[in-house]
Amino acid sequence: MYDPFEMYKDVKLTEFPELLRRLCLEGITFDLVGHMGGLQMAIPSLKALESGEKCAASVICHNGSYGHEKGLIEIYAPGLNEGVEGYLTAEDAFEYIKDTLNGISRHSFG
Image (cartoon, rainbow, N blue to C red):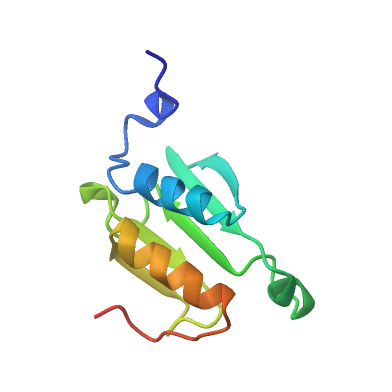
């Protein structure tokens, strides 16, 4: 059986497939590319583009991301405290993306 994540076997992508599944079920669009031995996802939004940002959130799991050793996810977003939050589960990342797209700022996942 074909495994679309086979080429990224150097990085544990434990949480990424679940996040992709949740985004697809909710109809949230994203761009997905290979990056630094893992994956990077850009979540676009009209509001982000109008404010000069390239995307509402950037989601990564690669050799340099916070939490990649355990297959966890890192997010960058303009409204996030200090811009970056790492060591996230798919559920944490999904909730943050939904909040971001709805214009709700979050300052931590604790």
